[in-house]
Length: 476
Image 1 (cartoon, rainbow, N blue to C red):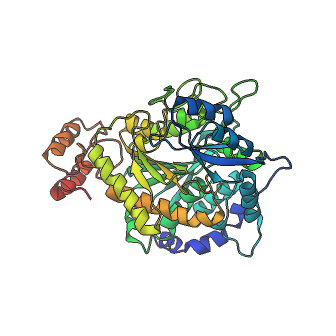
Image 2 (spheres, rainbow, N blue to C red):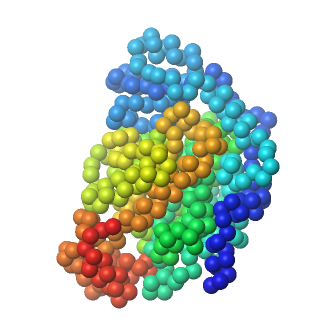
Image 3 (cartoon, rainbow, N blue to C red):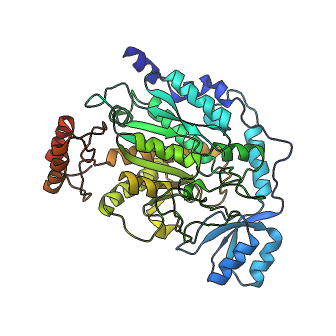
């Protein structure tokens, strides 16, 4: 045990200075990278279908991919097309004056050398992220295990980490699992670093932060930094603004939007597209892609997933289910309690203002991971749209890495602390109705409906956990 305790007392600063290999392969650029000279990003307020059709003609790169309930939608267009918007009277404002200048400044900043550069001072490519995961495994033996979920279309490994303390699980089998995946959309680089920063903070603070210790003692976190490895690689080598995976879909078309490819709510044109060239192309069938298959098969194979966050950017939102329809889910009171607490914890920790709500605060999105997790596994699940609100969009300067990582740290810690697993009726209290639900599962033993320990069955260990929660009545 002392070996473990010695490992977790290492500070985050010491860890990143040990991870020189984690940066290997990062920041490499090819001779021919896609350029966006003369392009701008505009925020449009469509007045109706005619304006939406006009925007579809003007832009092949919507930065908000759906019909926003508030009306605001962001698009990348050429500067010359601003005159067309003005001619048609479409209300708009310019968010980014020069997309290529933003990309050039970002690259120059990332390539600027300075002594003792730490991991979270910069972004890292696929190889750099993989190496950093190996560094965490070596630095925290007994806490971090690297696992492989499968391979992508282009045969890259979809790797993940199982992160938990050596404190044994109740019942001796497995702890309840929390899944945190990022980068389904390739251009959302900040999601990768934020997921890794949060993980590093929990590990490095295990011995000095009671909340971090409680989380790793009671739960197993499964961290999936890069859900779309081929798309991510493409953003480093060919097109920084690529979104989808790299499936060949036609003679001149590539890519399926992985976060429109999940089976719950799949196929709705109100929240995805059947067009091969669309950035929200959902694929030929639900879970058709090896990337979504790898993630879904892993979660189906885990005895008990209790919570999940699908990490995206941008807009500073925490989005509950359902994403594919304007309908309240079962257990809305419990979902709202946790979601609002997550939002408030970010504001208190970093000062960043996030908004919590359903599809009505952004847009409909069908075939998404959180809808699948909630609908298939019954676990708490949200989409987190990270910084910023549009000034930099998908191209966040490196100065945002640590602040945004602290946003994710606050939301993850609060989500897990606020879970009330014995509240089977999701009414924010553990009472007699929950006792009835637990007793029905306890009688059959083999079902995981009443499983509170994470081992996949409902047995005496779960009875002890439930009895403790029942005696306290109120959810945290």
